[in-house]
Length: 491
Ligand code: ADP
Image (cartoon, rainbow, N blue to C red):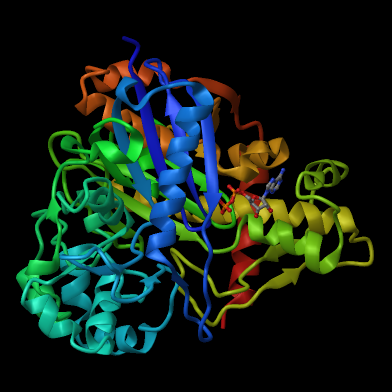
């Protein structure tokens, strides 16, 4: 029998199902949109039952479309939007509240107060900066605000899960309540070092241990799906949060190997090996996907990357499509001294300045549309360099090459400029759906379809590599100009 692998990739905007063959080649993909609700300013919610039905439907469609029966699937891997919080009844599977999405700011005030008094303890234990993104304050909010919930949680009648845990619980008809270290490390309840729920944090956030899932390795057979859902019982054998799954899908298995995802924002992760990193540069320390022994990574985010290109298109009308930015930027030899710092919502790592605002500097009478478009693409590369430098400083590892994925990596100008301004090789793989691929790899390893990480490394294929061509003096001159522009945009 030819074994297939099925990846369930539940993101913030869609639930996707992707089918792979035993060589890690993508055969088919199906997706369903997920609705977001905004009941109050800053609040973001989703319907957990819709997440489940959208994900199950995508899985059934991808099997149907490829003519593959569930019995031919060797294993399922799950990857998910991280931090999003669901609390449901153990007995009925009914959620007691809407899912609170990672972006939701409803607990921001609480987190600000908490950061002032317990911030250093929390960061020391979890590797995270105290913020409303993470699950702990969201669980606390549900237990405080849903009538009777706290008592029921303490009695063991309610369960918590991120989306991975929820989907596995549904797929097993309530038989299995688990998560993996990469997801657990984003709850703000796990001790990053030990990989277990931390009693001091549980007490601080008033989260009863009885409602928490068991933490299992990211690559292990944890359960079988109840046969009714897909038509046969299929082993569930891979779990990882979306960014850690992408790191795995890029086969970044060794210290120093890094990936950057270029979407609305950028997410950069560097694998740092088997020891807990401590960031001195305001990055997050986190768990990477775990096959056997614990693995760690440092992570940083750029808030506005591709979103700045959307702004050129939708608000300024300077380009008709995002793709057009490539030709327009390439029509001039440089940005003519123009810098655009797209700090629309402040600056993320390594600055963490929420009062910074977007700024365009260096305008002269000769500045044209092309210079502004070019400066916008260049800003994505400069911000990425800031992340990479912070990662290198934290990890003590020097980056040899940067592996890239995400929608904006189709822009060859951006990729070449990224190589030039970093002074490193940029490598774009042929399959840029690295999130789904990563969890398929995790599942296939546990199910015995693949025997080793080395085997997976051989599957990774380059679409195109971009070598740095810029001279050192030119790179340094441009970089100094960027740093000056960033100083001007800060609050
Ligand atoms: P997300 O997963 O965050 O929704 P995607 O990975 O789908 O994002 O990438 C979409 C983003 O990439 C958009 O912000 C868009 O403006 C940008 N983008 C897409 N294609 C290009 C391109 N050719 N050049 C520059 N930016 C692009």
